[in-house]
Length: 137
Image 1 (spheres, one colour):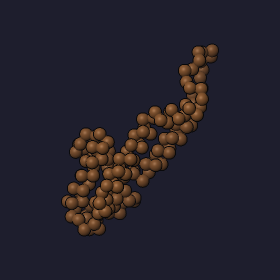
Image 2: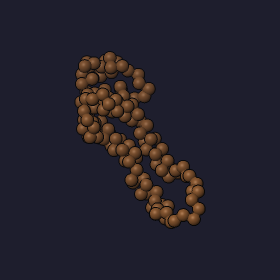
Image 3: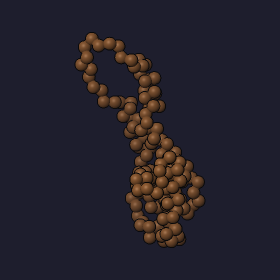
Image 4: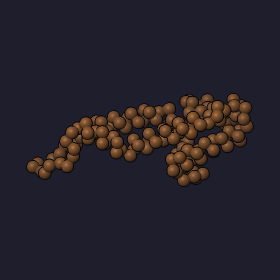
């Protein structure tokens, strides 16, 4: 797997507990955007939808960042849900449980796997996430 994809997935798993917070923050940013004053006096009519509720719904539906966050959350949840109990525990102990309490050696001891097996589990999970997100690996 290439280094960029690996680091992206690793950071995504580290931040996974906060993804709902990031989604809500993005929705709030779309609901309450920074408004710049228009200094155009006597200009033409704006070609924006006049209904604010419709405009907000369309803005939220079309927002690429929000869509990507939701997709990442859905993919990671789907991959983790399909894992058996012990492999899921490996990922949760090392990446999702915050603050992190275990190194790979500690995770191996806690799950009764070898350190190499834990890293192999991680690699398989990362590869599946990368495939589902359409990332190069």
